[in-house]
Length: 268
Image (cartoon, rainbow, N blue to C red; front, side):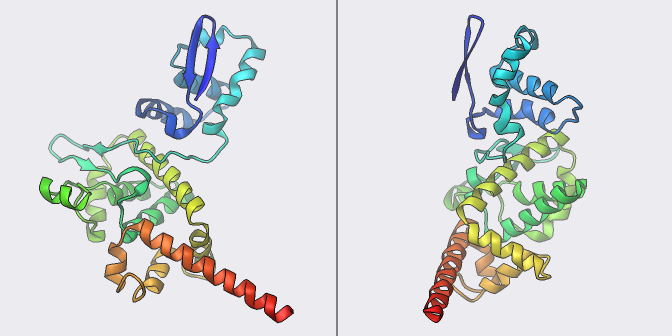
């Protein structure tokens, strides 16, 4: 957190995505995805949210003073999204529909198969901006609740992931406000960035598989992993994504190190 003084007011200012409150994220989403012809105007609106002050107070600052604090918005406007704390724990798309629940922080309780589908929809929406992919991303992550005791026992209050229900549930969740869906998308971006940093070998390998003509990179990886440490295709898909990604990252790192050692011996 940063400490900023405006006039006679001292404010604590978030310095990272995870230091933002859920309300601040909600207020920032329309600004971050808005169309601006004046970048300074966007920065001023971001500062309003970060500082929790009215625009007139910010506009009292001189241009030089404004430029001196604009850098405080860089982590939101110029750097990758790093939010991993859940921004939307539940959603209710319509009065007559049930509440749908989200995964936990850092996607810590999603299965590998669930991750494979979610990531495919995330990439599709990032590349095309087509609404159907965003709706299917939300429908992959957000599901109806289990019975209470059953959810308590497994550590996930959502129904088990079933890829056959994605399109049906996506049609229902499409009723959610666009800004709510963009908040979920933004949170997933942050979690995915964290996964890329934690398991770099895996994401490099998945990208290489796509370059080699396997457009369903994660599906290809899942098929390759089946029958190994986690069992068959279905059993591997049900494992926690973090467990599978960690195992894959370790295996790939060891493989690269062995390859490096072999080359070094051959050149010796």
